[in-house]
Image (cartoon, rainbow, N blue to C red):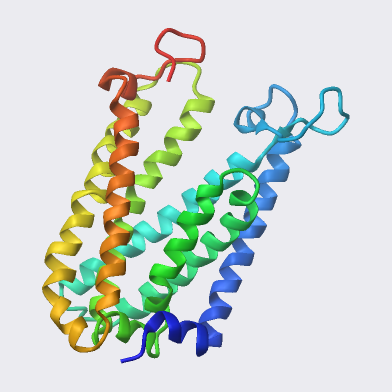
Length: 284
């Protein structure tokens, strides 16, 4: 059986690529709009607090020394996380119920095109200018999920002949985006709040629960209960490399998530749950 990753390169589907390109353009437009809006914000304004130092700005220069890149990437991340999380939960629920409407594969493939559009835009506009690891993460995600979004052949190959299996493996993995929603909210709260709020604690609790739950045991459960039991079928069809690649993907995700979760709680649970204004003894 053909390798779906190689097939995506040698026989790409124009309609699928067009959808990805359209979503990438939309995210790029949103990113640039937020970046410019925040960069141009007056000193002391609400938007100015979510700006960040502009790299390479010279002291005394007439151009703004503030950048809206961080705000732009977080706004785009919030939109992406909300849509993909809702799509992932709906898709998994439909598949669990036997997909009575028959829409789960089509809906999830549109979500994957949406997601890849975000990854392309964010990697190009933020990753290339601020954080190189974003390029690695986004690139890996595109490679891992791209064939599943290709409705004609790629999806079926990724599921060893069963497109629904590939959709299940992909959508369950995207449950990790549920925690991203609370992570982005926390980013904005840290910049807008001037004193502790009960909403900060509520969001932090949601983050501390969903982040490890949706990224560590869920990743391992996908491997143990959904992928590895079908490894023999993948091997019979000459696709054992997909099992290895997917295993590595989810293990790396679980390890990285474990490390980040440790950074959230390493200084004590109280610091993670209670907001401390800048300069205080409990500063985040």
